[in-house]
Length: 129
Image (cartoon, rainbow, N blue to C red; front, side, top):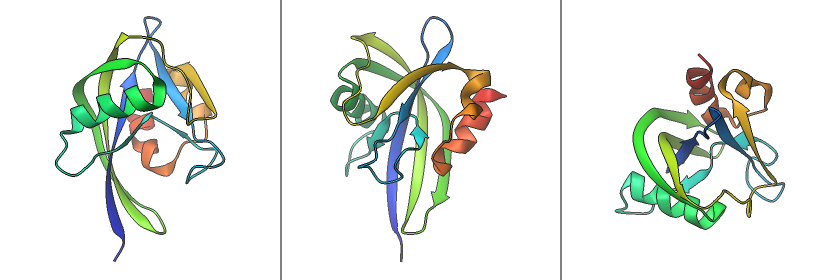
């Protein structure tokens, strides 16, 4: 039986209506694919608390997790991911890459120009309308 993993991703928009996109590094699983920054929800952890913690750890800035935007389940070869993407707002600091290879801000209509991790694609499609 495949392991199920609950993951949260942040949909962070700047004042130019651009969305923050993160490129997974070659050392990460699913290398060189784009994703919404975030990470695993720990046992007993609230999804918004988990997202705020992950962004603090990964991007060295503080966010406020707001509304759930999408909830997707995707089956990879070795595990099943439940990705919950949450609209979020930066409340202090500026995102800085530490684990990712690159961070970019893109307009919603340009999101599909990137090669996304499969679990993130339904959210990209919904954002791109």
